[in-house]
Image 1: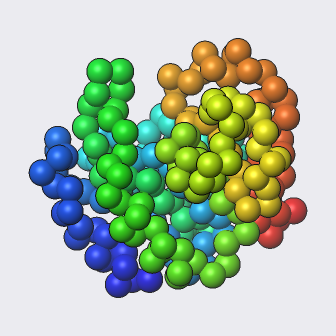
Image 2: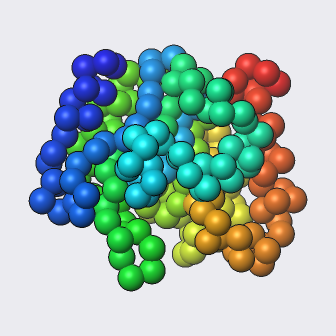
Length: 192
């Protein structure tokens, strides 16, 4: 695992396309119990080098019912984005994750993850890649039907504060999805 993590952290395959240059951000260990597949680091995470070290990460940890020490323990949680580097700014937020990363690195990472009990797919890019044609017409429908993908995957929207409006429009997310998510997180970590 150390070798592949070092290779990823030294990757510069798409450097010419990155506004701030390469700075791959991820965390994983062979003992990881939960794998969180996100989108790509934002500018704040690019600068800190710590995955989910922003307001989205605060929301995600609240959703999971997880403290920072557990979240940032790679023996408990692997944090693997679809694109490992900040892709740059677009017209309405960050650009999509670079498409080179997942095909280049994900299978190799998975070959070292032997104790995974729960995999979270956060946002449309992770869901489209991993569900391979099984997504619903919208992200909302894919998340609402999260049970269809269990036990292999648990589908979630991105926890960005920009999605607070979405959460207000979809109260079932807090009422039905989050309690089930917290329960499965506890079980995966051996606490439930």
